[in-house]
Amino acid sequence: MIRNETEYQEAMTRLAEERNRLTEHRARLKQTGLTDEEIKRVIDPMESFHLQLKEEVESYERLKRREFDELDNFRGFGHLLISLRIAQGMSQRELAKRLDVHESQVSRDERNEYFGITLERAVKVLDALNVRLRTTVELDAPREMVPA
Image 1: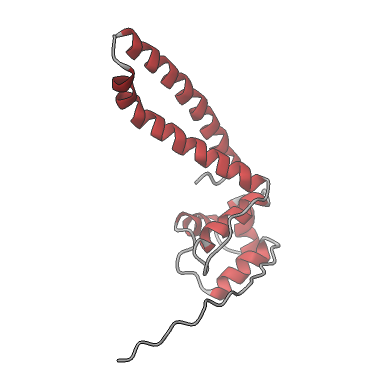
Image 2 (image 1 turned 60 degrees about the vertical axis):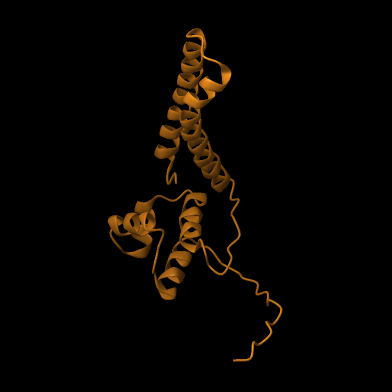
């Protein structure tokens, strides 16, 4: 996951470099007389990395536009907290300052996607990010009881 502008710029540079490298590599392989299928087998792993990097870049760009994925039973909540910080254009340093903790704590929390944080801590992070989180509850149809 891209977490800041510096990582985003580095990813954009790597993406352009990878795109050029893929094009050049494909052309060199074609010159050796390999079939399209053989070239595809050689290139596929490189293209897979390229696509993964492209998805990360697109995900970061969506966050900057303040587009977020929905949560289901709080799965992905830590990722959402990181996404909210990015969308606010706030650095880890600034968030740490607002939370009155060391920057390394925020970095560690984000690296672990806030796994295991308390509800109280989550509220503090949301407050520091100036975010109000609202939820809706949907009840599933009742399940039939199976006799024991």
